[in-house]
Length: 93
Image (cartoon, rainbow, N blue to C red; front, side, top):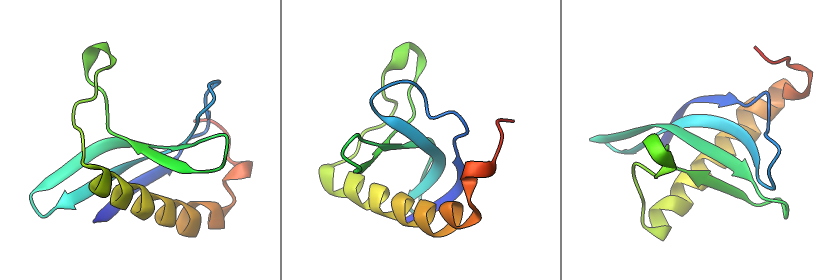
């Protein structure tokens, strides 16, 4: 599992789930999912969501085990690389 192109989100949105980053996930050597979203729940847990197609329907789904691995990898990357650079001072592009 490899996370790449992770970018912190300047506008976390107004919903209960805070959109903190967008990233790509290399799930296997043959499968790269672009445009994944990393969200933070009100209780502090991180969750990852696959990109959506027209109409808001998810374009890909994962087993619970694979989803957990994707979320763990994205969370580690986010915490180690993005927050280390203090994203709180970034302005919206």
